[in-house]
Length: 240
Image 1 (tube, one colour):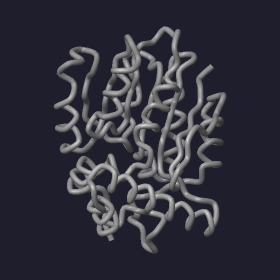
Image 2 (cartoon, rainbow, N blue to C red):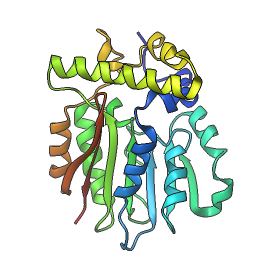
Image 3 (cartoon, one colour):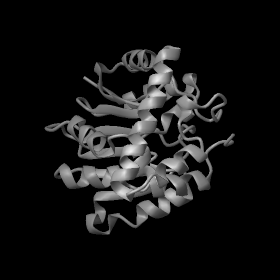
Image 4 (cartoon, rainbow, N blue to C red):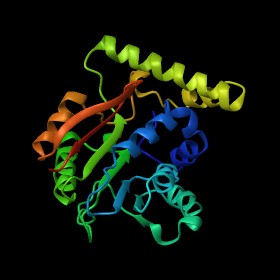
């Protein structure tokens, strides 16, 4: 069993995220579509930005926004810092601890706060606190958009999620590497949470229905699901 997120995990993800995340390009495009136009703020905050791939897509596709990209992994921060030269002062990169609360007030209210595949590391009570804290920081009309690992609601759903995730990684590995090397790493390092009997305890995914309710409880409206694949979903809510 892997015991918590390590710098080794960061380096593996940096190398293989394009294979490990199903429909990653579509997912990033979908996040961009959720960032609202015509509101006063031009700030987008990305939590657990990894190598900055999503931040780069946001900056390329959404004119006039700035990104605050935050992560707690040294390997991820180093990789992210190699991206932003062409964006100048449109991006700021900052270290943080997702579980901490000292970073949850921003100098200006964000247009959007986004996160991909990180919040499932928090226990459910901490997820609820996080959603309330982030919702309170958004500018009016701003969006909280989260793509994350979720807990399927039944054994049948778990089996289907495990199969879909494996198949997606196989397909992407063959397409991008010409072989199953990325899938073999995915299996050897037990990344498919839904396919193992003793998943890493750092992974604490919640039911999607619970998370949608928590966004509503945090005061967000228009809460909805926009993408799902392999036991992962993209969902969001709007501060009105």
